[in-house]
Amino acid sequence: MGRIGRWKDRMGRTKTVLGEKVREALASVLPITAIVLVLCFTAAPLPVDVLMAFLAGAVLLILGMGFFTLGAEAAMTPIGEQAGTHMAGSRKVWVIASVSFLIGVVVTISEPDLQVLASQVPGIPNAVLIGAVAAGVGVFLVVALLRILFQVSLQWLLVGSYALVFLLAAFFVPGDFLAVAFDSGGVTTGPMTVPFIMALGLGVSSIRSDENAAQDSFGLVALCSVGPILAVLVLAMIFPASGAYSPSAMPQAADSRELGGLFLSAFPEYALEVFKSLFPIAAFFGLFQAAALRLKRKKVLKILIGLLYTYIGLALFLTGVNVGFLPAGTYLGRQIASLPFNWLLAPVGMLMGWFIVQAEPAVHVLNRQVEEITAGAIPGGAMSASLSIGVAASIGLAMVRVLTGVSIFAFLVPGYLLAVVLSFFVPSIFTSIAFDSGGVASGPMTATFLLPFAMGACEALGGNIVTDAFGVVAMVAMTPLLTIQLLGLVYQWKLNKAKLAQAVEGEEVIDLVY
Image (cartoon, rainbow, N blue to C red; front, side):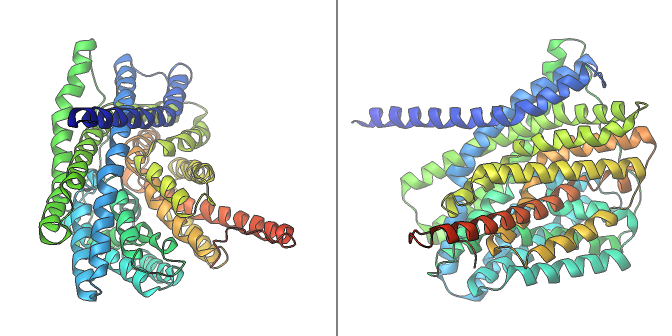
C-alpha cells in the first residue's frame, strides 16, 4: 500500500473512532436534555431563547465530548505515561519530586474549570488563588507519586490529609469560605487534569515489578484533590471575605441569527482560554521530547494530532456548556424554587444528577482505565451505575441544603468519616478508585449546570448563594467515595462466594483483594 493509501486508511479509522466517541457522547447527553425538555414544557417553562440556546449547547456538547475523548486517548494519556515512565526510571527521588511538582502546577493552571472557580471566589485575587491551588496540586502530586514508588498505604495518607483539612475548616477558617474551599478540590480535577495525572501514575507504576503495581496507579486524583482544598483554606485565613457572586445573565436572542451570534461571539473567548490551558502541556511535552524522550516522528505526530482534537473538543464543550447549559440551569432552579411545591428541587436534582455524571468527559476516561487495569473484574457498567447513584444522592442533599440552609459540615464530616472507615474494610483498589472518582465526577458539567441550578434556586428562595448554593461540587465529590467502596464490599462478597463454589474444581478467580 502506498503513502496515499496508508493516509486514507488512517483517516478512515480516525473517522470511525470519532463516530464511536460522538455516539457515546450522544448517549450521555440525551437523557439530561430530555429531562430539561420535560421540565420546560411542564413545571418550569423556559423562555424560547434560553431553551434554544440550551439545545444548541447540547449539540456542541456532544461534538466536543467526541473530539475530546479521542484527543485524550491519542495525546494526554501517552504524554502522561511517557513522562511518568521516564521520570521514575531515573530512580532519583529529587528528580521525581521536582519534575512531578512542575507537572502538577502546569496541568492545574491548564485546567479550564479553575478559571471559572477563581472568578467566583470573593475577596481573593484570581492570580493568587490560581497560583496557590496549582502549588497545592503540585505538592500532593509529589506525595502521590512517591507513595506509588515506596508502596505507602493510601488509607493512612487520606486519613492524615483529611484530618488536617477538617481541623483547619472547623477552627481557623471563616464559614463563608468552607463550601468554596471544598468545591475547589473537585473543580481542579477536571477534563484536562485527570487523563494526564492518571496516565502519569501508570507510567510511574510501570517500573515496579510486583503484582500490585498497576492497581497502585490509582489514587493520584484522590490525593491531588486535597491540595486545592488546603490552599483555599489557608488563603481564607489571609484574605477576608468580601463581595458576593452574581449568577450569569440570561441569553437574549430575538431570532435564529442572534442566537447563532451568541455562540459565535463566545467561541473565540473559550477557544483562546483552551489554547492558554493546553499550551503549557504542549510546551512541557516539546521540552521533554527534546531533552529526554526522543520519541519517533510518527509517535510525535500522533500526539500533536491528539492535542489538536483535545483543543477542538474542549473549545466546543466549554462554549456549549457556558452559553447554553449554564443559563438554562440557573433559570430552571429559579422556576422550580418559586413553585408552591418547591420541595421538587430535591427529586428533580437527583434525577438530573443520575444522568449528568455520564456527560462528564473525564468519567469515560476513568471507567475505561478501571476496566482495562482490572481485566474486566470491575466492569465499566458497574462503575457508571455506582457513580450515578452517588451523584444523584449528592445533588438531593445539596438541594436540601439550599432549601434549609443547613451547614455543609453536617454532610461532609459524617460522609468523609464513613468513607475513611470503609477504606479499612474493602479491597484497597476500590478505595483508590473511589477517591479518584470523587474528583472525576465533579467536572465541568457539574460546575456549569448543577451549580447554577443550585444558585438559581437559592436566589429565588432568598438564601445566601456563597454559603448555601456553593458546595454542590463538594457534595458530588464526596458521595462516590461511599458508593464505589460499597461496590467493593459487594465485589468482595461475590468473590468469596465464587471461591467457595469453585474451590473443588480448581478454577482461578480474579482477586483484587490485597
